[in-house]
Length: 158
Picture (tube, rainbow, N blue to C red):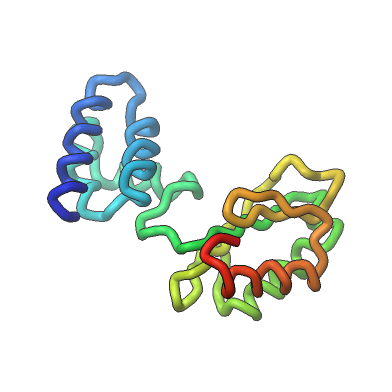
């Protein structure tokens, strides 16, 4: 971590260290401030929260929204819940894996796009659904998906 990131981490540790049940809010705050939870921040987080490093790693690993590496430029969240599965989200997931060369929770080699499965975007009536850079896309077809991916390679924001 650079000096500014270390200072930010220290401020957050001071803010959350005495909060009962503060580990989750602290981890969210660190990720919001730094974009991810750096591995070298975990010992300080564990000490401040009176937890073991293993416990902190366990929490980070359990909750899929936490990341331990910097985020990609674009985030694609594909719904994999039952309604979307029944309407073809698994085929879309296979298309993404083949087209991007990544598995779930992976980044493309160029760091431009990350694939994150989610288990409901609240658009069940319009399945299959995905979220690209926070924008919901519904009734996604393989053709729509290809067009969305092409837009990411041409624009800074999808």
